[in-house]
Length: 79
Image: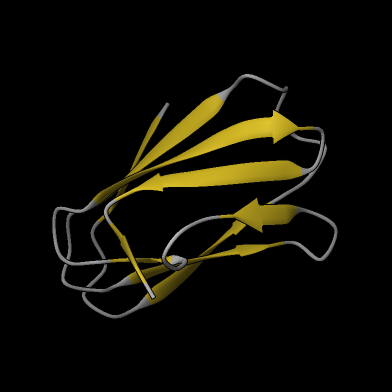
């Protein structure tokens, strides 16, 4: 799956628990100027380094489902 985000302003992507299966991944591309921030839905857990925001336009981030309610964010991230 590839989700393209072409917003001019900053946006937030919520990653919900119990929607995806362990082993799945969702790829996100920030095409627009708006920085993307990732967050859980209150029950899902995000693991990441160094932060939960895309670094700049054209940054790509993958959300890997590593447990029933846990996502590992990897890619061009910043704090």
